[in-house]
Image (cartoon, rainbow, N blue to C red; front, side, top):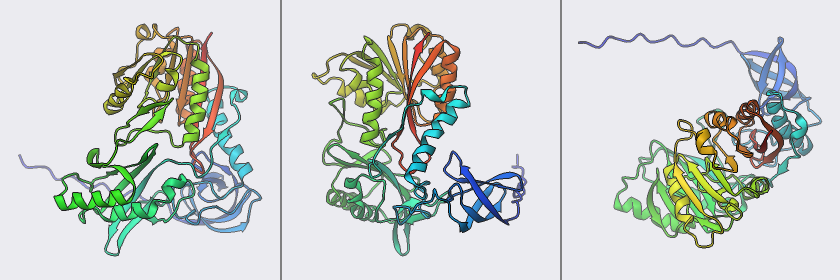
Length: 430
């Protein structure tokens, strides 16, 4: 049968661009200034509350054309790429405003679900230059390699030679990372370079549609030479190893773990330390703990210093790495692990009955299904960790409906200058 010709949908008509003068009233959850134009909110990046500005507006999006009168909250950004690079959203405001705004993000998310703002502890702030992982965008052009970060809401790559939020050890290696990117096969036109600073060196993975591991011998040799010069201990392409000079190691609670390529790691060591202190302080009296969405064991191994821990995660490579690390004879209490998709198959009420405490640290989407099972359980103590205050607040509301009291929330600013914040909260069964 002949294939029917599909009708092309007409392009969605864009609203016209208009110019407006307005005052920036506040900063929205994504870090954009909010102005009221014709009684409707318009979101404008790179603006500060109190700025009087001229905007070009299309729908609810605004582009800053001119600052007519600057806000007292405005400050000079520390990075010369700010405004073009889309990696940071809030380098242009004072430290006092930034700190208050970041904590307010958490308060607002919890307040929308009816939680009292007084349960939110003071924010833990990490040093700006502390990020130990980054994902660089790479484009190969006729003029050479463009290496950096995407512009805001764009596929355009802003070429950078340094970064204000990277850990110093990574920042110093940027020229070598650029040279390594240039040594990739010429047919790789558009790809990313994921970089992780481990305890014993740098782990790098090339990812993207153009990054393929079917390298020729000459290409593999070229990448190996450049990786050695860049101080890389392991180089992978889309999860497949190209060369490994050493096994990447990250220590959690003094236990060495070899994370898989692309394995999850908290954004900064300072942020991880703050979260681990919070989590372990609230579960240290538990005899047996379930660590759900455990990854490679960020919380598993610190908790094993005082409790038996059962770790569960859907990522098979992460669980394998955790299981290998759990053979360490230095462990003070047993650590077991299981691979399981907790979104589709959360631990049930019956399974949860054997635990004295539960820790869960899901991705940004949260853990609705697992929270629903937890809410029906009698686990005495639950600690939730999240990089998304909105999904955390939703899951907290589910637990509250099951009789749990959220008594304290710790916000941790390890995503410095970005509109993201990590939080941890402790729940007790009434």
